[in-house]
Image 1 (spheres, helix red, strand yellow):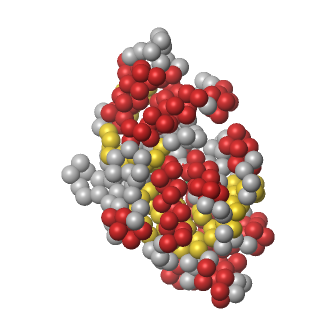
Image 2: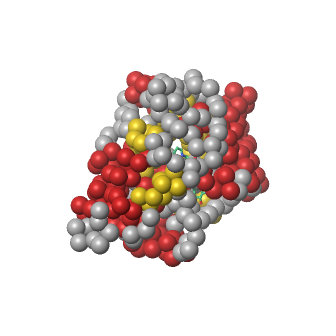
Image 3: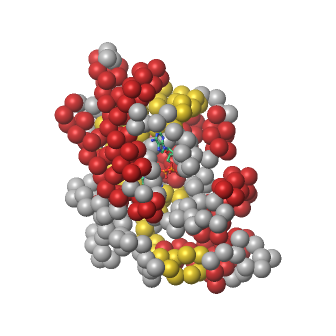
Amino acid sequence: MRIAVTGAAGFIGQAFSRHALAAGAQVHGIDKLTYAANPVTVAELEAQPGFTLHRADIAEPAAMRDLIRRIAPQAVIHLAAETHVDRSIDHTAPFVATNIVGTHSLLEAALDYCRALSPAEKAQFRFLHVSTDEVYGALGAEDSAFAETSVFAPNSPYAASKASAEHLARAWHHTYGLPVMIGNCSNNYGPYQFPEKLIPNMILKALHGEPLPVYGHGKHVRDWLYVDDHAEALWLILTRGKIGEKYHIGGKAETANLALVETICAMLDAAMPGSSHRPHRNLINFVADRPGHDFRYAMNIAKIERELGWRPKTSMEDGLQRTLDWYLARRDWWQGIRDSYAGERLGLGR
Ligand code: NAD
């Protein structure tokens, strides 16, 4: 299978690309290489047989049309996005440009390409759109988890741009017959995640003895999924999912932010018995809450369990330990980012 993966150099894109390569696919990564694409990740991907990187902006319609025709993929997996909620609050324009305009230009390119395929090739073609739990807004403590039928109520500019993108993907299926499928996933964590996101941010700050900023009261709840489990779910949707359907993906691992940060601190205490920053939990520092901060997200994943036989494999404890070990071992991956952001506020996590 020859597939085009937008955002391949990002956190989930690299995990999905590795998964697809291991399954025997040829992967054509399409990536603008923004700040979120680490050159070390790019070099690792490019060293893999079967992987080709195309540096391109999904928001450029002519370039996308030309590139999709040249790659001639059997599937497009669309992950490229501006992804950090805090950045979306500070600067909205890149979120509209990439997440909405970019998704539109990619859908148009895919449709243009799909229309020129033979009936047999068209029957095989898929467009897998990667969306998020944040399109549904916030849950209260006692509310049922979001189902595929839940109503959209995005609260942050990031969530609104992803909701718009998902609406476009759905409409291109219903109106033009583009064979779209959608995956909505909860918070991912694991190796190769840019250190502005909550878990790597806390690991690296704690390692350096810096204050660990926790928003508000720290009781906000997120459902966490190890990134390789997400990659596996996306592969299953791509290869066995039904056209026109959407699938919820989650870790069944709802955790309050403060409890998560305390767990990371305890793991770091155990990993670094000689550290002068022990106990790391003393570094926790409550800061003013994010404007419009969603209280809780949770995903009902009964549909993907029932129809595709997928379930999260990695427990939160194992996944966090693997993630911590990876960041401790891969200074070569994150030191350049910390140096270039020295003195600047890195985001505080989704
Ligand atoms: P990321 O920020 O780590 O990576 C995004 C990638 O997209 C980067 O490589 C970047 O260079 C690329 N990109 C950005 N703008 C581009 C453009 N205009 N043209 C081409 N490439 C561009 O993001 P991630 O965490 O890997 O998320 C990937 C996707 O999964 C996103 O669509 C996101 O909304 C979705 N998602 C993420 C999570 C999560 O917890 N990380 C959860 C659910 C859904």
